[in-house]
Image (cartoon, rainbow, N blue to C red; front, side, top):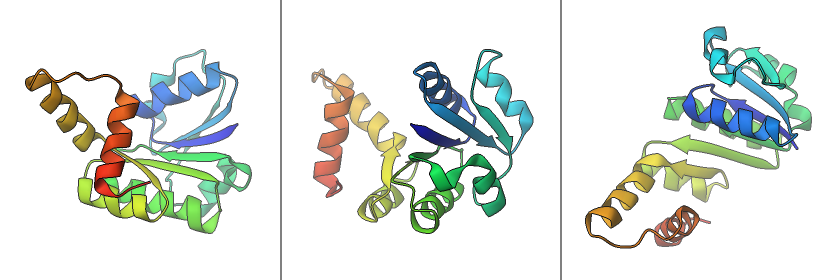
Length: 152
């Protein structure tokens, strides 16, 4: 699988290392080269300095042949814009983004962009733990949230 990851923070670098270790073709884009230190020296993927809404940067990353695009910067607006470009302009088959705003997450989920809203997930898990309710499985928690919110 060819995957492009926008954002080399904690989430992006962890995902990139895991995907590369599994043998996937991984390109990571970040605004600063210093962010790539999180990848470590054994990372076999591609590092690319630039913005995720810059068409030239996306083309250099190989978005025309990407199977998946993941936007995990620390900015909802940046993630949304990059995800929309990947989906609408480049027709990337699988587009995912991490958002902090639950309202935006629902809206973009409805548009066909897979969203992970860490705010909602954390609140749900903390709720269950506080009430001593069993947290059986994070995937099931995500599915339940999507059903409740009307998402996919």
